[in-house]
Length: 240
Image (cartoon, rainbow, N blue to C red; front, side):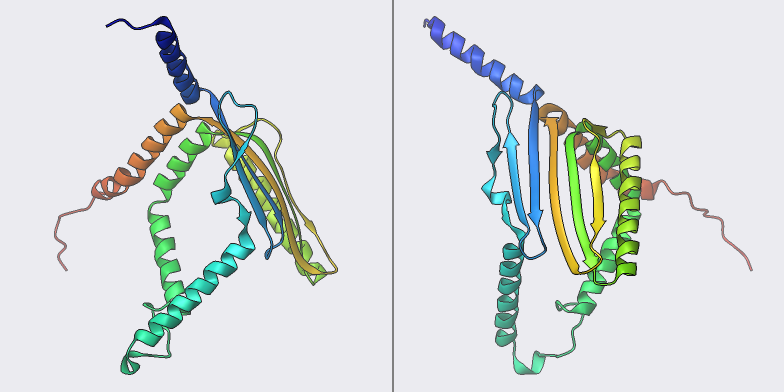
């Protein structure tokens, strides 16, 4: 069976394109603009060897409308489940099994406890991921006010300080910034408001990211139980 030269060339081109897709950088751009009720989000991807960004409709849209729609669906589902429950089993007091405040606090406590116990593993996994990504551009500018000038100044000062500390920690952890990040919160002293503008662009290779993602997943799955088994304890009985 003879294979023609054009078919061989086509296969060679497909192989080269596949390798290029693995080892050439993929760019992801995230843009956000607006306030709490109408915050618009746009996510787009620039594959290798393509000169333009391709928008991702599933990850874009107006966040405020999505949150309101999700909240409305949750309320309707909760009302339907309450109607289906027998009258003698209903209870006006929210417990941990309900979606009330007590249940939310219980879930938050369990989440924080699990995060504290796995903090070393999570920190190491995040460090691996940060090293595999190049931050081409980071611009996050917010304008906020609480209606009180003193509270607004304290809030903006604290957030700006934490942003600087976070960037310093990220640099020491191995983060690569192509441009100097611009992150700040500007105060609005005469009004209670919040406005956000964000333009974040990152790049990574699929080969490197796949390797790091698999290593991070193995780390999070295996290191926690293993560390617990390696703790030392004394078997000597204590006499009183």
